Amino acid sequence: MLLKKLINLSSAKYKNTIVQGLSDNSERIKKNYIFFAIKGNKVNGEKFIDKAIENGASAIICSENCKFESKKVPVFKSPNIRNCISIISSKFYSQKPKNIIAVTGTNGKTSVADFFYQILSLNKMRAASIGTLGIKYKNRITKTGLTSPSSIEIHKSLDNLKRNKISNKPKRKHKIINKTQTKQHEKRQKKQENEQECIDCSIC
Image 1: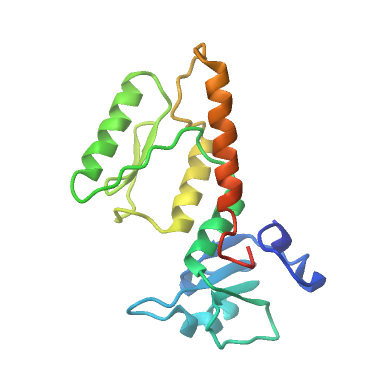
Image 2: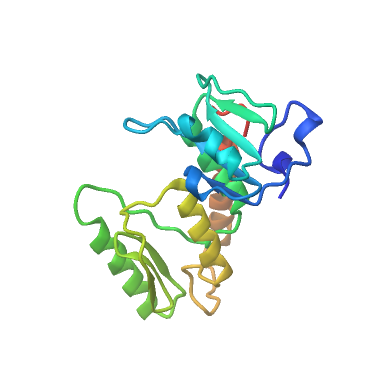
């Protein structure tokens, strides 16, 4: 994929820059990856930009206060890098299951997510779940070791699930009772997605 499809470029200089992957970990950067240098509470990812470039990064995205400059690769600065990661990850890993259920709360998230997975599976739906137990689908479990994977990993996993024909919907088509209501819901959803895109990120 070309960089211009992921980021709003003010110059045509980098429009043909190739992007083959995304990561916020400099150790996982490979040739033609975008490196997101996140400044956290304990670790400042900006300190690892040189390492990311050394490993083959084709572009760097950091916070607007980042002082790093480079003549080797383009460096983009965002006022909200975490939101930027989510938007770019969604563009890069564009395929998603049709229905996604999110579970939030203090306690019981894992149990509720697994109950949903079991209920949908028992009702002959192609279902999956992502959480503490790992990524579950088609009677397989891929351990992640995290309650909530990073934004990049979530979008990557959803893209992979879609490619494996996971949609959280029945295998057989069911008659839609109220088509007008459904179309209105789809229009509202599409409008919300368009409004959400690049709300506070000038580069993506």
